[in-house]
Length: 475
Image (cartoon, rainbow, N blue to C red; front, top):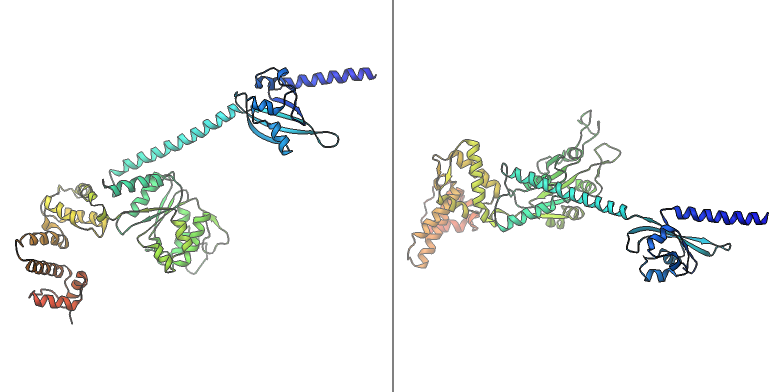
């Protein structure tokens, strides 16, 4: 009976080895010192050398030979616990290898069994997937770029060739695909709203809504309900059906908060919560809601100064100022005045069915003008003179008085000839005063515009015997 049991045991071991050799995964067995005891056929094929040259060698020696790197058996022996790692075997590919500890009767490590599985194809597929996702993202950005460029021909306010304009355009293209908060700063009329909409159109949210909220145009008592909505019965006069706020309406798209400096202080904490967690609570609600939105804010105010004065939360300012964009005023990009004039002249000629054109004198005057109202002022001016000009050729006389005075002052200076310096200075001063009086109508406003006191202005008027054809408000 004992002989039969021994034969059966030997037979079982043989079958067990056959089973291990039939596996596609590698099996590598070593003792507690890392000496190789046995490996199956799959592991032998991976190592690339016969079993006879592997069995009896320590795993550190095999590692130095470059058979595998790193040795999971060594890692298990060093850590004293099962270990999984990615292993390169004989430069044939990547393998996911796990080392297991087989303890003896006393619980001490007796054997280390390493099980390896080829993940080369899986890794390649994963890499290809990542490349495909990156490629699709790049294609998406390029499509958005082409759509944006196609839209420029019909409704463009950011036009020009100046260095500051090109830098702004480049920054806008970089910022648009990044799904985070943007703060646009700039004077009134520079085109902040238009820039915000273009960022939306260039982003992956372009198919979603673009909700424009002018924080200065909504009464303080209504702005919270307009932004966050309310439940029925939330307050006296509330709609019985409640109201969806603009934040919820912007879901999957962009919420543009224009004139953010005008947001009441008590609402700034709610906006901060929305920025941080994308959550909000309607008025009268008991639970928060999630809004998948991107927020773009704009201001013509100095938010840092408002923070210093305690009128704007510092934590909200820092949260808004992640990607700041400064839009320069038109007076700082004079090279863009001509392209803007040309574009708007064509646009309003088409709109009003006219064939107006600028004279060189008009272009000179408009180029020298400081444009305190920026691009918006330029657009409004061009439309006005396209409508009001008597002839197709637009002359200096078609311009507003404050613009004509620039050319008149230049012409006056040219007639000074070779007068002594004192006489020249007096004539220039007289010209300035007379033009300022014509424009501002009263001596009080004229003095303020010239940066002098009203009494000093009156002394100058008396000295130069300037006739007042305006309302005298000195009393």
